[in-house]
Image (cartoon, rainbow, N blue to C red; front, side, top):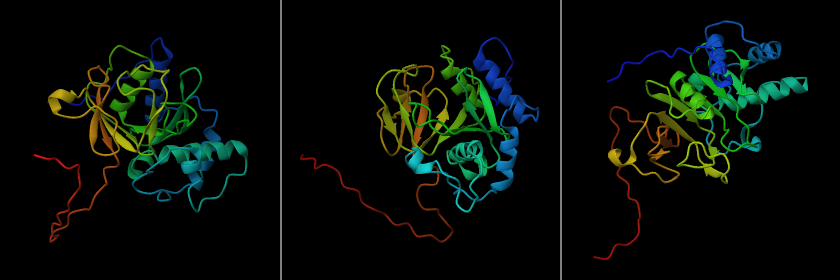
Length: 259
């Protein structure tokens, strides 16, 4: 089994790699170029952990569904603060609460650089997304998942993450294609809440499907270097087993098969 290696993100030519370096620097505590730092700090003081569900969101990532301040929190006084607060709230709904509450929150600007909206204390980075852009949902990525995502955005021939990564998209998403990772023109494909194991799974070898579905698991971008395991729903679906629990077997219906 390949040992996990902490990614080294060096600043080189190309905005994508430089952007990843800025995120790494921010998570090490170095001050990034952050025009919203004072607003972000005020937002953090007014948004206590526990105001968002442990499991994150489940459903549409449209503004009407999740773009609002967390319950019980004061509405910021200025428009920039309101916009920032909503962006951070969206990002924090994209993954498990015990991860997103301490994660760095960032967004990508028009030049492909990552702008820090809130500096975190763990190694996860969450994004608010933009519902007006196909393929730009709220998401939360660990270092290997972030590296994979930056490689995909930069259209590199293959991802450079050297160990499996994790990406959560518990608000749902939209995607141009489920077979071509670089498709940026096809109509939107709606995809429900899910989480992703970022590693080149092979559908045929693993016996998994490749078709879009609303439950179970399937391989996205099968047969390409960017293939990964797409798991529908959240990790908390189902009932928890406790000592002394009794199994209750259920029945499901399917099409009649005449022999």
